[in-house]
Amino acid sequence: MELSTENIDDVTVVSLLTEVLDASNADEFKTGFASIAEESKKIILELSRVRFIDSYGCVSLLSCFRQVKGSGGDLKICRVQETVATVFELVRLDRAIDVFESREDAIKAF
Image (cartoon, rainbow, N blue to C red; front, side, top):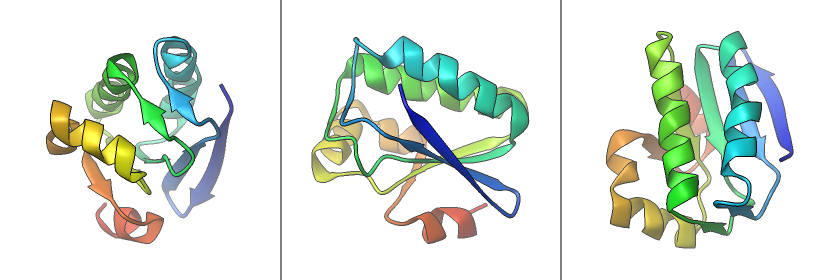
């Protein structure tokens, strides 16, 4: 799983460079994210490339959220495609993790 990181002040923006987050790569995503979460307290997941997410993908996002919160940090999500946003609404993930239209809006929310 390719993850790209960019630091903007004290915020780390993590971009998923894949079109699918599902059972086939959710564990790989969590492993890659864990090392990033050890370094940063304020993290934004940028999901603009993700076109499909299944329940495993949602659980992996929730697991990452809990990891960050457990260490005193915060996680926000931005730039979600409509199909993924629909899944977030169905499983109510958007009620657990703040979702923003842009990076700028997510950064301002910290």
